[in-house]
Length: 434
Image (cartoon, rainbow, N blue to C red; front, top):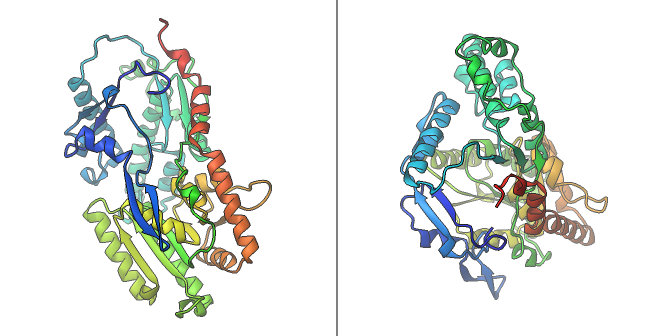
């Protein structure tokens, strides 16, 4: 935006009340030097490597961000966060008064992850246990039906609000499929209910020319520094880079690694064949910290603690260091909407193994020039088999796959591709005429 429209002032609403504008801008552009592979190498420590003009960027700090955090709403999380977001938006608008208010301003949406999906309704209806459907709910028919009705109302209004956008962009095929289904969502009972006063007035708010589908615009991934890492030699390290949140399913990673060591006990012995699992991730709060302790306990129970390392809240240079030397990148999240960590694996020359769902399946780990760039798996055994396949590749096959993974990631998920897709969305057509 600063390059294309330097006269526009950008305002960022932030809940980081303990930070300053200078500190935030410094985080997107910081140069750090560190030792790697016995040589002194300079790397950009910033995850984005972006230089911003501080004169046209301003920050408004909000005190009510806690209202949109899931920890604030242990029950009725979707409703609580939605109401909290309304209050947060009111706080934001009350702190920055616009010079000019224009009625019926066109609205565009770039959706990374829908708040609710048809899959969530299906899981509650089938009473399937999930991280968003606890045992206490799924084991009770009455509570499941109550939650399903709650979800139906929420989906109905979420779909209605999404249809008020003039154009919609999404970050992956998985997100597009879900957003498209949300745009087409209908509920006969609720449709009939909204024919009655006063609810019929709500239906009048839905525009007649609402969008029917979303456009995919992959998010930009700054892979320039990672793409400089040598492809060989690599250590026999299986690397996971993900926050210690429930949906990342780190337990599945430990079980898959344990399956590998059971099938190939030689990998647990010290020496050239030894294989190590490294879990790098952020811990946001006590809930995440407790989750890490549970994972450490699980590793001990499985008898693999000597071959597993936890790196919690690592600095970005430390993350880069692991990416520069790992052989395999691991992601076990089901229905990952995109998977920027997998793009980083590939750009760094790390061969990815990811759950066969979501963005990793449909958008990221796909053939390049008709050949593999990584592996997908569904079960513990399949993950272990994928590890074994990679660990036993010939040197030429290994180098070729690492090169293909990098070439695809750098080509497909570059900033240039993002800007091209963003501009092709036609967002400028909705700007007021001069």
